[in-house]
Image (cartoon, rainbow, N blue to C red; front, side, top):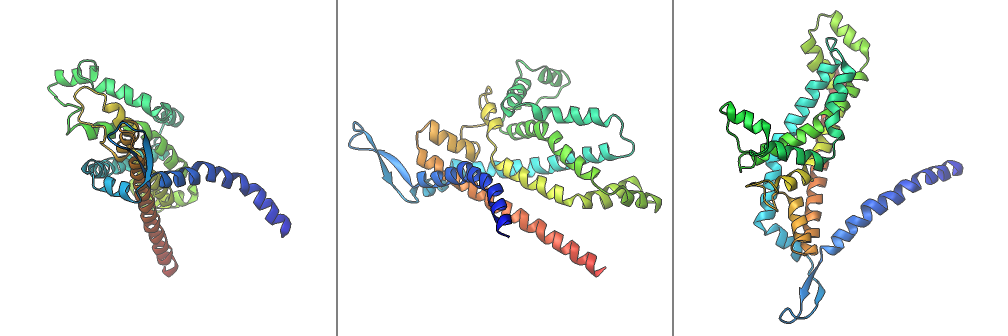
Length: 302
């Protein structure tokens, strides 16, 4: 027993050391930093001093309309982006897993390749494609009588959702496809023998059997959506863009830290965003856990 304990300790120690170094310590430092602010003494001619302000930075962030509007943008982004991503990735995975699919390896690679492009490069590519004076896509749309300003207040959110879909659709499709490949083929064959149609097999058998993968992708997508930063930051540089420097909470924290040198406010905004992500993760985990428990109870009853 002691040997097992020593072996487990030896194997787990590197993980906990790394977890502490890259997660616990930075979060703890951010919380500590959020409790202080820098103030200038006198009439501004003296040096700055760090002053303990308690929860004042949190109050300032929550009282700032720009910060709260950033969460409104995130809400709209999540409502628009997450259903499209899940439905698109699942639909593509089901198509590749179907008996009618051809050249599966080619399409897997082709759909996954955009994910291999770094986010900042992808955003720059799409900003070029969104710019009217440069983009052949916009010129073709205008030639066809379709006018759409990708940088306008109405077009900014769909533009960013499109970039994110281009980056992450293939990645999540691969996850769903791997889960579908792990399904026992005898179950599908039995359904086919019983006369079930391809649609019924896909949505009544395959999708319920990969529910765990769907929940995992939904959870990670929610967390990733709350960290929205790179795409709007690049789009902010577009000509006449409606994306401001505080468009999302992450951008608000970035602006507070590096444009206004208010590191306490930036840390407080980051901590509030982290707490929001933790609460949403907990809610999604509990919701999926209850659904699994309910499904297991129905199976026992049957």
